[in-house]
Image (cartoon, rainbow, N blue to C red; front, side, top):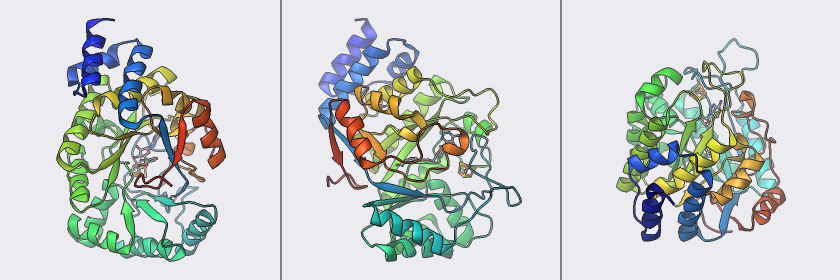
Length: 356
Ligand code: V47
Ligand code: SF4
């Protein structure tokens, strides 16, 4: 074993932190199996053999968006074919279907609609809660929270209070993309800055809501950008402890406007998941989002430090509009089988990781 791996192995065994330089050296290494074994050890220490999943449903209420990020194949202009906005009754019908299928979570995000008032989003939360008060709503990212603040002229703090009162339970991890501004200016120039994403997220955590963090990888960013992104998340997590899960999202290139980006291979996906586990020592969970990774890599990643496979999803648009070739939905039995066949223990959880 070379010195890099020896040092990291000692750190993992002692529960010590790896440095930015070590994370970068791991990204530059081609020894995927050695990286994976270290990450698997780190995960075993934290989570044993358990692999979590949940029964959930995504609801994307609108794809009309004023931002038009270059990596996004989901969003539309007002006059473009395929543009849609769901009525509250349609949202209620989807929530009813989800509740009847045993879902414990509604994951709801959407475009930044130019005309809908803040009151619409509050009513949407209340509508879902009226369908079934037990449904946990994981909704809106820091990007939407910032937009609602502009729409309503309320402070970020007041927006969060209003959303909480209307039924919001936690936030998903989207909108983080790559937090470093150089890359952000190229792939999503209209989106809030990385610094603002972190600032809003800190306020979300201060208000007592948990959230996730993502990283969109495999487009224009280099390894140093990924390490900087992980660094900023680890630092914020040291301050708030409010993140539940880290989710690296493999870029899907179809129908997008990121010049030259070809998508993510299996080696890069597994390496990125494993290094995330090793670097983010203050995150309990690393999630393989099977929609973007495909089922085979998502299952294989369970040997590379991953301990969460997301959920049943049911109706996915963001990845599939960009060419993801995974299924639209997974049955609970299928997720359980993927986990069992990797020799691990499937555990159904709710959004806040209570075991069901
Ligand atoms: O922020 C957009 C990404 C995110 C593409 O918190 C793309 O549990 C790949 O955040 N290729 C939204 N990714 C999805 C998201 C998420 C998903 C599942 C679980 C959780 C969670 C969060 O999707 C966006 C953006 O980073 N995205 N376009 C694309 N072409
Ligand atoms: Fe809009 Fe989100 Fe797509 Fe960006 S990623 S264009 S903010 S829907």
